[in-house]
Length: 119
View (cartoon, rainbow, N blue to C red):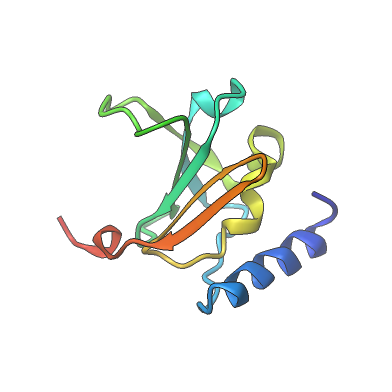
């Protein structure tokens, strides 16, 4: 992606396309990310729980379903996603309760109310 303004514009455009109000994912907050996103494994998946503390609520991984291993997701500041997995940047302002799945020529974005349930 290009500069920060291009990313922000693309994020807003995606929120408009899915008729949702954007919820920011500031660069200094964290996502949970699986190391497998750096391997080239596809598709790339993301889901967003409500933000808590110093997190955005986003969890990002590659392949099918995420592992149940408690160490599957590592904390990573949003600002480092440009190096790790820039293709997810356009989706980061989707609000909690939303998911995406992307691969070359594939984009699926949907609401998942179960992500908002308190456990």
